Image (tube, rainbow, N blue to C red):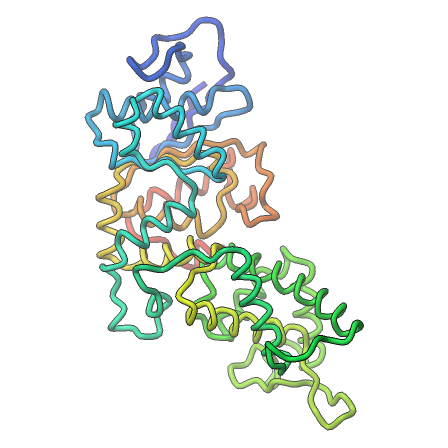
Length: 390
């Protein structure tokens, strides 16, 4: 069944039936169904949204679409990016591409995760970033030969930041057992919260504390612990907007007296300070947090020269499991499409399982799981911030 919209058609792929249309020559050993073949050959709009349920031959159709572009449309393999969510899925796509196109041709096609695509964009178009005119920009500290930090290094830098926030020497004596238990609980909660935030607001680099707090309040309904931190802070400071609230750019560090002549910090203040110290140390180390990769690529693609160059390179972007896209990932493909890249988006709203990880909820995706995406994706200009936040 095929439904057409004015700007962004929605093609529904049914499970395979015994009667199959001829396959794209050389793409697959087996045949394609009529619905699959219609998807493979559809060039009616710059954004094609494909709803593919379980057992509908989604991977086969995606590979055949790439083969159609290369073999029948004359698209250079290097102008195609095939994006998925896990390394295992990316490896499978690469194997299938080599079988369909041959190893040499498949080698030129990008097939990887959003994070590997982001790293490629950062390394390839870093030289086009206008960093000199804005020394406070999110990219001002980044070098072209950046490295992605391993988990062990991220943990070490995070613990250094937490110790600094607590006013300790990172190399100081061990904690007392009760304090160590409290720190373990706090460190686990703060680490998880940092990852949660970075996967929902592009990147935390370059944001003032006021901007961070504004974003945290937007995210509070989707994270119980974050909501509790904000409630505690508001209660002690008299609510958001008060002169002493953490939401104020001139906020004080402490709240109520702890009985020893010093002001006690709220957990929200401790979290914000830890996050700021962590980002600062990441910059000094010359590394990049894995959770920042997509957001930094978004920051780069917001610069016109870099965005145009990347869109010229990747003329066709195919995204698998599109229902699990989070805001930075969605923003990335949206920026590339705004400069003329064609999008092929495959997914199934009924299989959306990663809202807890930042995937946009169904009410944002709209009718059929993609309705409002289609409206936004077909716009000519880069995305409107208020619309995206909504």
